[in-house]
Length: 253
Length: 161
Image (cartoon, rainbow over all chains, first blue to last red; front, side, top):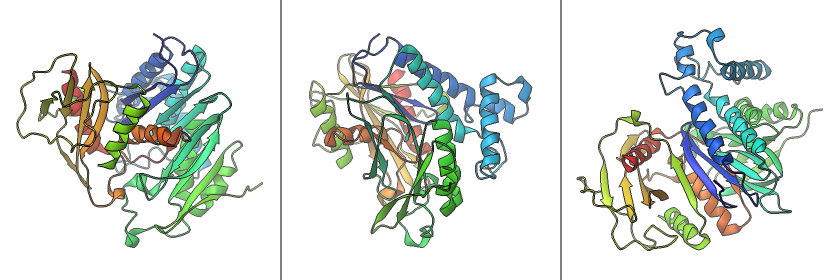
């Protein structure tokens, strides 16, 4: 089945909306369907909300690590690498009150990259995937035009505070609003040196997502920490309701 | 509800076919449900939501199902209470395809009170893209709203039942 150019398809997967938009003149037959089929399988495998998922069974001790699929072991290896790299700021076991395993913070980016490889292998060259605000793009939306990725205003869901232009790569944003804090209340506003949101751009969505989460938790030092990683750059949003500033961290060579 | 108007305008003016597919795990167990058949008030063609009118009110009792496969159907999920307030979602289908998703109820206390709609950010990013022709996608942190997702899922379950 060939989908006409410029069409967007959105499915509800992994607790969020995932959209795939292929802008090639001719979309490879079945590519988008295959990518979504993979995303649904991965959701069933990695979901922490499904008691029968592999992750849930591992978390309950019904499976040992050796029993797990190669995919899950790869995700957990990546998670452990990021935990060490971030000195514990990114930890798939620490974010849950009960201490159970919750790799959802890294699974989404990793899984979306797998879906992108399915599109690549099918011959798609110009496409974008938006997984609940985490973005992966390839090629161009129109010949000669980069993908223009708006960064959501951290205090105004309707507004875009900055625009990045990309011809390939991933964009992930972490923010206070992600945690459900009532950030418009001045009494609970974060300290000025902290970020309202932190955006990471780089080649891999799995890493960009994890770096955004850990970098945001690190506060002021987060930009420099992210920028130490080859190919990745962090941008912070700081300010208040009067004005929000887009801050590009200096490199720490 | 300006957002809904913008979405409608986008669907109408740009005519982009928005294919929304969905899984229908019935694990939510949300039986309470209202179903309405949208009548001739629906414009035909690319636009399927009633532009300019107030959102359809969810009825207190289920409406009899009298819809045909070729007409527009509206499915309303239950109002789900959560930390910030109440979320209620409505989906509009035409010929079995979702053509619009409308938030009937969202918390009113500040826009930051409810910022994590699961589907609307996707729609909104396309709206912005169409309006400005300059932005293709929106990156932003997502705060999972179980209430919105549950109401939407129930609507989708019913649509596929």
